[in-house]
Image (tube, rainbow, N blue to C red; front, side, top):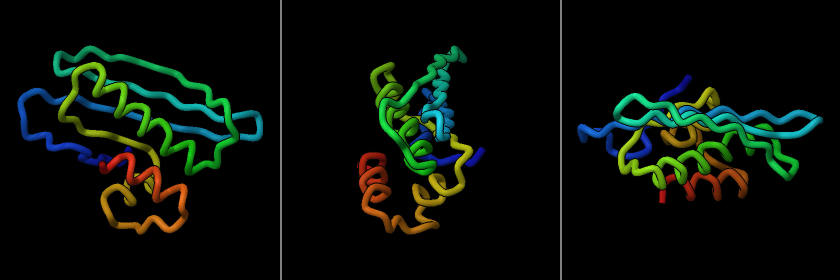
Length: 110
């Protein structure tokens, strides 16, 4: 999995966010695991109620997972995704060109 430092992780209270999305002809969904600084895993499975491209299915759990981690108390965390496409766009290695990818990236970096 590709690691992305979404927020400054220099603080002692480190949280981890692991995300994985999938899109098939049968539907789309995602898995999210948030690991607290105490080592507790909060696991979630999400089924999307919209047709998502593979890239959208990879970005969605990152956006949702970030919101969930924040609601759980995370202010600093390290995010992991199995999508090189998403990881490289977040890191700035790949440029987001499609409007939908630009919007996802803005949600993550704002």
